[in-house]
Image 1 (tube, rainbow, N blue to C red):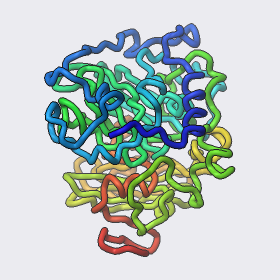
Image 2 (cartoon, one colour; image 1 turned 60 degrees about the horizontal axis):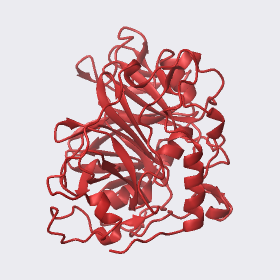
Image 3 (cartoon, rainbow, N blue to C red; image 1 turned 45 degrees about the horizontal axis):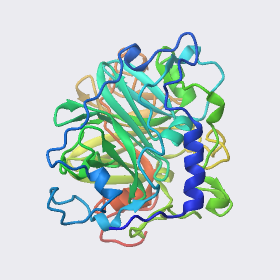
Length: 424
């Protein structure tokens, strides 16, 4: 397959924006900042290719094919890959993240702007979307575990994974390729290609491998710092380089990307007519069963509680207002309020529970009367300090979710629509 560079003018503007940022190795942003893992360096083992060749190198030289005998059969149709960039790492991943306690960050971030929240072994961290917009991947150490935090602006999808390949710690980079408009990563151990949206290796020596997913979600900065004032925040040097939304303006018809009137960018798949392509949804997969809820189904007032099932598993979805869309304004902090979503197992103190919204926007269970926040953390009552079991979910656009999960159920304000139905 020959290299295809598409929408070059827009892409080059995004690269310029990304390269204007730092990869995180220019030193601390403040006297209280630390590097990954509160001093533990990000490490990696590189250069282990059983086939003797690299899928990443082949992609940018000979070209990939669906029947290359040097690699296992690809997990996708390689002819549907788009080369959004003329080479890897032109959007630079952050390999040595500088971190600052939330309470010491100052006024850099706006209360409503989005951050990616990751908690592992009691170690809570926030990765501002304004930074991830330009870097897309952060290789970090969270709770003593090697973690890669990823964000794809074209799908508004944030996911985190344990960054181990075949049991060996490594790091991930931006390949420059897209599939279903979504980031394609590569590991620096084997240079196999991985789908950010699913965590699956689809081309190269590790084809078929699956990364261990770590619960991650988009939350407001105010919500994170209120819950975790001592949590660590990605705090790169040259802060003033970040904050503009590069996915707005002339390249997108003069408007922002996150609007129903917009179209998926660099997308060559088939759209699912059950909803608008750019409709925001919250998606969950459990044991192979997929279900999505439109954000309009979940929004309302001081907060909402939505009970449901994914496959055989009950879930409860909590929604709170106060998070701005990073892709709907000129800056990441000025988009419309889309709110924050958390998805959890509805079990409290070993007993199935129902939840209600109190007069201050907290979520109260009917078993113990404990009040919980949208992060699933008990903030008042008998179980204060405990946490609901988080169920990994994805805040994304309908075109992306339905492309990767074509058999998904879709719940809208009008009801739940199975895959075989083509309209609300």
